[in-house]
Image 1 (tube, rainbow, N blue to C red):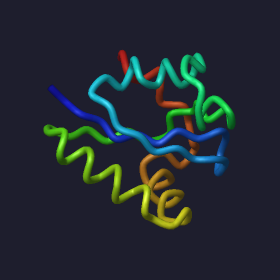
Image 2: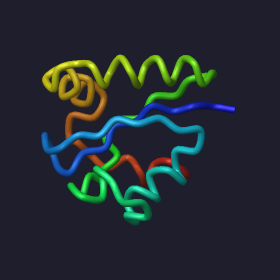
Image 3: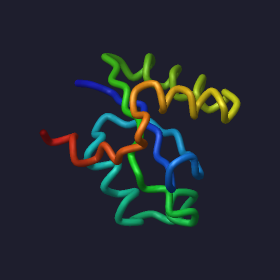
Image 4: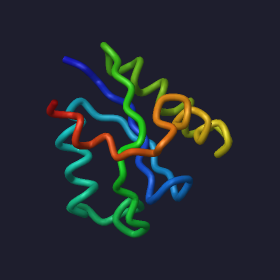
Length: 95
């Protein structure tokens, strides 16, 4: 089983949300559909702009916590290093 750390954005350089899951397609779909009330639904944070894959839950959880503590500029740099156009990567998940 794989675990994923991901960052969602409302738009390019917009509001950011960092999370982790063991089923990235399902989880991002839930964010996009606004299934659960919360931060991503309130602020329309639905664009998947970064995905990192890990072998263990512990690795993913540690990475998620580390990213959440980073200043915003560090998160923007992380996204732009692998996705400079801020493309929604959701369509690539099942490819």
